[in-house]
Image (tube, rainbow, N blue to C red; front, side, top):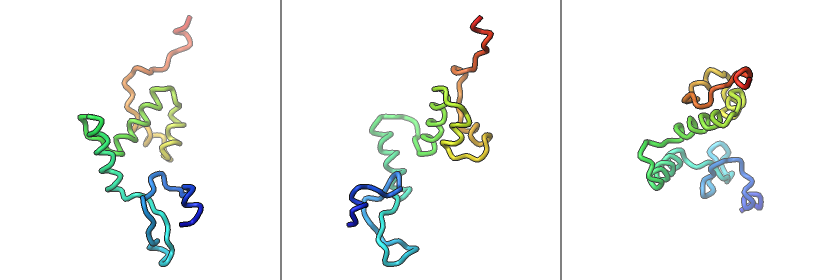
Length: 110
C-alpha cells in the first residue's frame, strides 16, 4: 500500500474500506468511494440505532443541515454555497424555516 493511502490522503468523504482496480485505468489500483447502497444502509442502521421513528436518508440529512444552518443565523447565500447550488431558489426549497428565526427590524429595539 502506498504511503499516502496509509495517511488517509484520498479525497473521498466516505472512502471504501479496500482498494480496487480503477475501471477507467486498467491496472491502476485505487481507493474509491463507498457504494451508495452501503452508505444508505449505514444511515438507515444509524437512525434505527438512535431510535428515530421517521425515515432517514442522506437527502433528509441534507435538508436538516440547511435548516439548522438557517436557524443558527447563517446567511442564505452561504447555505447556497455550502450545498453547491448555482441558484438561490434551489436552496430555498431546502430551507424549512418555522418562523422562530424571523428577522427583526432595527425599530423593534426602540
